[in-house]
Amino acid sequence: MAHALARRGAGAGDRLCVYLPNSIAYIDLFLAATRLGIIFVPVNILYRDREIRHILQDSQPVAVVSDGTHREHVPDGVPLWPVEDLVREAADQPETRRVAVTDGDTPAALVYTSGTTGASKGAILSHNVFAVNALNLISCWQITAADRLLLTLPLFHVHGLGNGLHCWLISGCRMRLAERFDHAKAAEWMLDFKPSLFFGVPTMYVRLLEMEERAARRIGEAMRLFVSGSAPLPSQVLEAFRNLYGHTILERYGMSETLMNISNPYAGERRPGSVGLPLPGVSVRNLDPEGNPVGDGETGELYLRGSNVFSGYWRRPDATSAAFRDGWFRTGDIAVRAPDGYYTLQGRRSDLIISGGFNIYPREIEEFLAEQTGVAEVAVAGVADTLRGEVPVAYVVARGELDCGALESACRRHLASFKIPRAFIVVEKLPRTALGKIQKHLLPEWKRGQ
Image: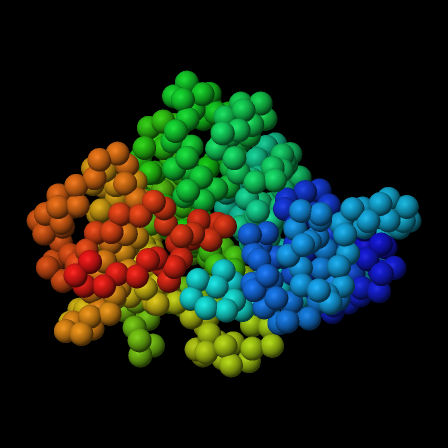
């Protein structure tokens, strides 16, 4: 595949956009790009014209690789290389290894953030970032060649590409790659393949709770480790999953810009609601808005430093400068550290609701509401208010009968008055990214009096 790309004129420093679902060809393209020093640009297959056009204009790729299903969304005028043609060409190329001279700081990929609050930015991930991250994970999570990894995560996201694919490549374990997660086929896949390792997101684990108990027990007997990330895992899902499968899901914390930062231990307490302890080589600070350290039990913003941190945003020196303070990356994530070092995320800095001078962290309210009868999923967002500046509003996906009055009464009994949602809006589903992260800016607008 490297020979095929080189014959088409792609070389070191060029960007190559890949707009494909999971496949063997996807892996070949990524590895070929690393051989040639090409900067790999994965594109979310759920993106359409406007989102794709932004990435193409920003990254200026030498070409876009796509298939018959997705290439209709690629704008006219952009060089388009059908993946089917590349696969045929690669089969006729020499098997000699092509190698471009690179070092650890050479960009390996340009990964665009999910864009939950505006136009996405391209995070420059070096070869070191991918290598350090995977070496950390196979060490800390004890991944070996004896493992069997069922990978259903999309390779266009760092969860699948940086964690799943690289842990397989470096450990030498056996992997079964699925095009996407399909809850209707999950039991069949797991009972047939008998994976010992599974990386997922909370929405996948919610669907796996629908599994028949006998099948879940058989799957749990073969499994060694379930890992969750990319979005907060509700504590009640962790408990229900443990009861059904006999496993405590290991929750960890990462970002597109850094890959993995913090993880619950493989051997040790996997604390519900917490993302655990900093991984080796990752330095973490919890600071107030003025940049001063906060004490244990106090809320602050997480800052990171380490070989896992990205180089900056592609052609955005302004955004890169704003993202760092004294060499530390500002994550934008709000957290609390326990006296024993475990970190618990409170949400995004941009999600913080300031109501009448009080700080409200939506996740606290979301966790409480998720425990109530009739609530399947919930998101809490701030809505402008002339008197208090902002007030919290809850968007609820119902499970069976839902009594919004009972929800409000429960909040009044257990939460401070300023944290009580001013409205409970029932929605069919919550808007999410492909990896299950809630896009709060796409929640329906609420106005007082509705």
